Length: 139
Image (cartoon, rainbow, N blue to C red):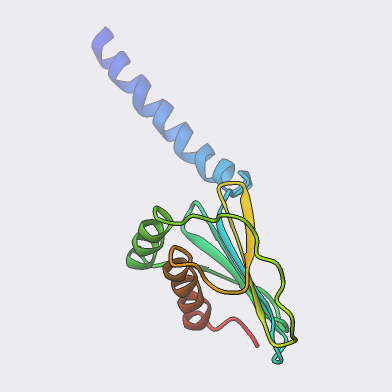
């Protein structure tokens, strides 16, 4: 008789956790994985892609509301693979002239701004730009 009570206790505990877990997950703050900001140029770019550790992203452009989308499994794997090779380094000084795009990356608590993309930045920036285009954040 006691063994059946012991077996029922974990099931009851699991059912209570199943009810509580979604509510807690909804209020838990999301943690930023990587953020790209592209700003400047004659077109007046102001793009932002912020990807969180849950695989979802917030995408925005100069005008219009922000768009929230979750990456596909393939996009998520590819991005994480590219991030393994990312080296932010130091920020680059703004070059003379008017038609330059500033690329700002934030990753693992570090931020850097570049006007020319270093080799380790290219795959990350490319993947984030594809996500921005695919999910059509407003212009």
